Image 1 (cartoon, rainbow, N blue to C red):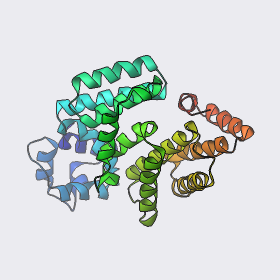
Image 2: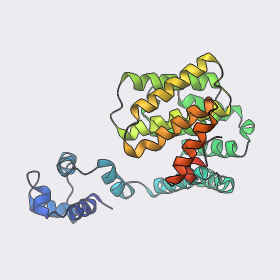
Image 3: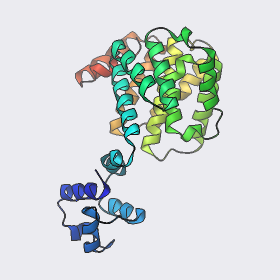
Image 4: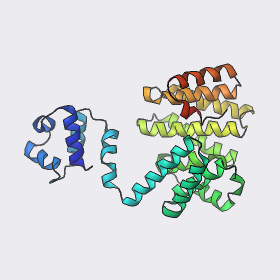
Length: 277
């Protein structure tokens, strides 16, 4: 929906009149034009409205997002969501189907790389990925701003099994030490970083790269970061995953069984189905 439509939905959900909604920020006749789509609104005034009524900005963003992106971007997002669902359920047939759809229909080169590597991983065909693709992926992370790029963070998360361990660990150490030096204020960015760290833990476990003292020390540093920084209730699944990975690395079968039992009782059976064992 458009910004005016989203504001109207928020206002009605709050049970406010137009006058109460815009009081102290813009005039009611002007605000009425905004809601009806007959006038735009300054970014500053929009932010003031959202803050005044304690509207979650990410929620508002999700309301309006599809109205302000191209149809091509909408298709890419749909395919990306379908692929993520197939991955979470370990449905290899669907993974291959959506990989082919992405290769054929998307112009997003990063999305294509992610799809290719993801499908190769689940089909045990990583060795078939040629060196040209690997170098193309590595080159993306020579850019200074990759830590702040959502697209590149997703690329890193999806292609980790393909990376040489030393190169991957170097990038992850750079990321960890960067976010340790400066507190991550955005919950959305924190979640993206935590996903990267947890994918790295899984990759280390899959590749048995946790037995040396150096690797074990860095893995512990990552787990400590997750447990010390993931405190919001809706992020609790990441804390469980961190404890789960710690139990895996320590081969603590009793703790693994306890975590699995708890998560099944709370309806997370599909999620833990994709976790390593």
